[in-house]
Image 1: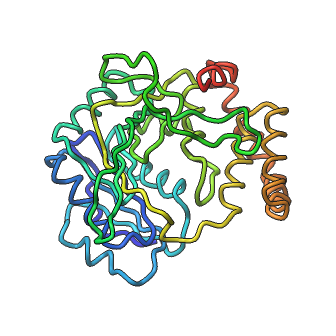
Image 2: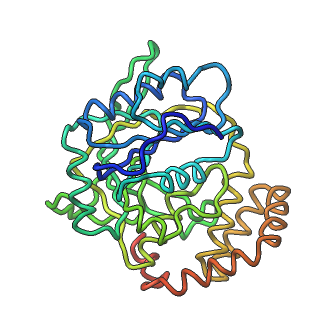
Image 3: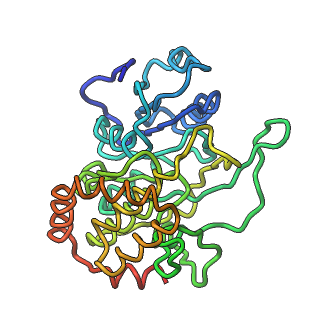
Length: 320
């Protein structure tokens, strides 16, 4: 791992923007530029290169931004590990997690996020997603879709247990700035560093998959909440394929680990069976990994039993 442009030990700012990426090319600079254009110097920035290829010299590309922190992983560690790493490095009380293909539009978004977290830091805040695509010429354009209001987690369809689906235009949307949602989604999440570490973030997840349902369930079970900031819109460029390989083992491992930590035995077994049907060879390999990590899983289960103030029936009802 390499680190350049390291910050001092203290900052007067309240929010750190954490951007992790893998093979994003010019989008890293475009996302950073959009953040800085609308943040007005109110944020620290940590950018984590998760083992990208050599096609782009990201360190050189970012060298004109002397106040950011740039971290280069020698090998791919995954989204969840990189984001937890960024949270650990942050010097501010709050942070915002972003993908490296995002756009901002509102100049006071930092003030709104920090105001809400000052009021109550036991929440995971999700910005409103503006769906973007690149057209044939590479121009970023908005896609006309219904507004989204967070997501729900599937607990009923065995083929896709723990997966998420957007909530579009629900009945009874409140007039308030924020509203409770079952699950964050859209790749722009803000939280308190203190609360994230109390929830133990994405601890134990590997590479890619199911991060949103994991952190959302943990916040609700602990007694906190997940909320949508309705009028802080962040553009997210959606793509037809990833700029990196996603092996089938990655989401299966995370799904089974989450089930092992948070779910009751009957529902855990349903998740396991779903993963077995999906890919039996991967399933058996993950079972071996979980068996080797049984002491750690037991420790995590006990930790959440101690800190949780709600039970899973609340989560099931919330996601209906």
